[in-house]
Length: 213
Image (tube, rainbow, N blue to C red; front, top):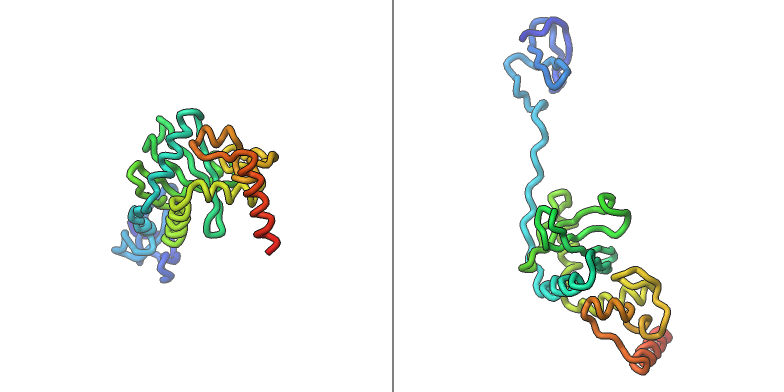
């Protein structure tokens, strides 16, 4: 349909009356160059390139850790820090797109407010969210690799640094929980070692000596 009024095409070209065409996009009539109904300026942006899955060597123990906790907890969750960032791991429920996989999200906010970085399948493969860029996906994969190397050690480090359990977020108070970074109940639920009072005192003394050195 020829334009009855002058205007400007999205490409920037001025169009006199009758020298262009009009096309309805949604509820708006748009003037554009004649014969260019599919003008490049009107095309939607190309979809971002899908990021390939990333195999995280040794992550299976972390998947097993969450599966162990699910035997005791309805919604087990773990927070860990690596590479200067914090991440939260949870198990996708039965109504999820991929039930049983491990969701990797940001820590701040609640529910839908958290940023979803992707999922880990039962084979230990990290599938990045298509909303994150390649740099973020690589950083998440590297953080998961750090966790995979020593799940209990990473959990302990988070608790000692923040003073809160990385599983239940409750403040650590007695000498045994401060020594390992998580409490007795969470140790039982998650299948992690828990020290005796003697072992805890020795560990805490070693931490004090290390900090003073």
